[in-house]
Each structure stands twice: as structure tokens, then as C-alpha cells.
Amino acid sequence: MAGGNSKGRSSTPSETNDGSSFVTKWLGRAVVLCLFFATCSWLDSIKHRWYVFTPEFLHELAQEAVASAPAPDDTYYMINHIVSNLTATYPSDVVALNHDTKEWMFNNAGGAMGAMYIIHASITEYLIIFGTPLGTEGHSGIHTADDYFNILVGEQWAFDPPNLEKEVYPPGSVHHLRRGHMKQYKMHEGCFALEYARGWIPLMLPFGLADVLTSTLDYKSFYRTAVITGREMFRNLAIFKI
Image 1 (cartoon, helix red, strand yellow):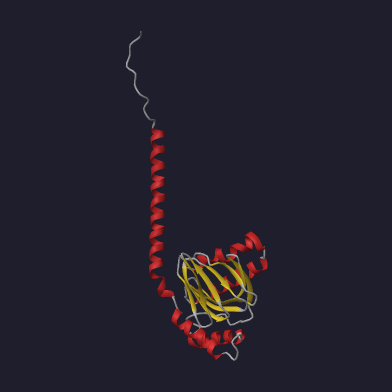
Image 2 (tube, rainbow, N blue to C red):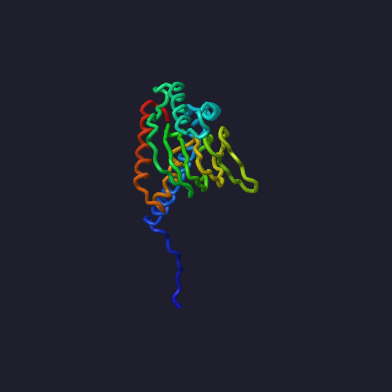
């Protein structure tokens, strides 16, 4: 038998470089990901600096609109009362409001259907009137914002297991859906509310628009919602309201 020392195959320079490149690439991605999450965490911790409205003021305003309405179901009066008071309270160089109270559009989200009028939309806040004269029911969604539902007309019910009793919200009450929480809800016939959300509003938009793409195919409402929301956000960014 011929003798000789057998030696293992050594790595070539190109293979070594490939291995180093792979490790460097993934280390770089990990650093970028960490920086992204750190930035998001920092922004989340300071988002309150850009809030203009407060849940307490809006609840009082909604109660005032309900109490002063000439009839319990005079939704038009309540909306005009709310918009007029907001305009008198907040200067136009602080927050941009949409005064066109006839600018309504259908909204399908979480299986529920109604219509909404956008009073204000910015990166960190939105304020709308939402409701339906017919009644509707659905999933609240899980959001990156706290949502305050101030009932103006009608009644809303909610279900939040493991609590097996329904929550009841009559006119003048407020239903607070905490950030990251979800419920089943039902708006009875002829229910309208002043809805205020504070948090990261753009991240809520997919929930509000997904039903159009997956079931209703109501692209007219999709277009109106996207255009009006974008317009109002741009108007607010123009006066440095984030």
C-alpha cells in the first residue's frame, strides 16, 4: 500500500469571504432593525406632544350637544353644534378642521357598515361622526390608538369576554376602547356618535379599508375615504400639526 499523509481540504479565500459577507450582511440587518424599533419606541413615547384635543373636552362637548338639541334624534343639530364649538375653540393655525358637514361617505370595517364625516384627520388624531339610521354590528378591530366613542343618538352595545354581560352606552356616554384591545359591538337603529382616536392613525387605515378590497368592492367610497383623509392630513401637516 502506498504511504502518505492525507490532509483535510482547506477553505479557499473566496469561501472565507462569502462567509464573512453573509455574517456582515445579517449583522447589518439586525442593527437596522434594532434602530427601527428604537426609533418607533421613542416616537411612541413622545406622540402625546402632538395631541390637540382631549377626551374630557370632547365628551363634555358631546354631552352639551345632546342636552341642547331641540329633539333627542336631531343629529344635524348636534353635528353643527360640535363643529361650531370646535371652530370657536381651536384656532385654524393650530388645527385644521373640515367644515363641510355634507361630506359623508360609506365605511365598512370589521363587518359593520355605516357612514362617516371626517371632522379632523392628522398623523396622531382623528375626529369623525360615525353612524347609521339602520343599525349595524361587527368587530372593533385592534388598533394602535385609544378610541373614544361618544354616543350622540341611539344606543351602542359591546361584548368583552370573559365578561358575559353586555355593556350598554346610551346618549351622552362614552365608550373607551383601549389601544390594543378589541370587542364585539352593535349600534342600534338610528345610532350616531362622535368618535375620537389618538395614537398612530395611519396604522388604523388598513382596518378601515380592507373590507372594500376583500368583499364590498365599493371603490368609490375607498377613493373618497383615501382622498379626503389624505387631504386633511396634508392640511394639518402644512401647519405643523402631526
